[in-house]
Picture 1 (cartoon, helix red, strand yellow):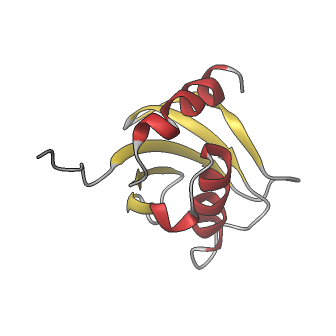
Picture 2 (cartoon, helix red, strand yellow):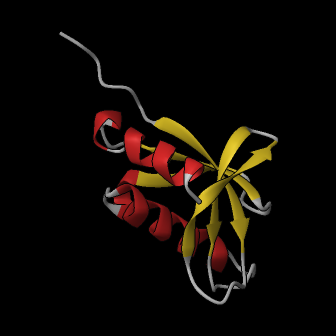
Length: 100
């Protein structure tokens, strides 16, 4: 019997206030190579964080409920936890980091 992991950490660099939502590119952040996520929402009252959570879920092809903030509530450098099985989205994450 195998135990399912609690989730995989995904470092993200947030660019709030962008003209449009865009997921892609790599940033050498404090939590390791981070996926860049630009969102139109302002960095006020968690609006950008929530927009990033939804954009990340969409880009990885997982449900928004499978993505949650783990670190960095008030920082541009965040770490999200993705609880969906990694074999369904890990390859997409690499593509997004490499081809942004």
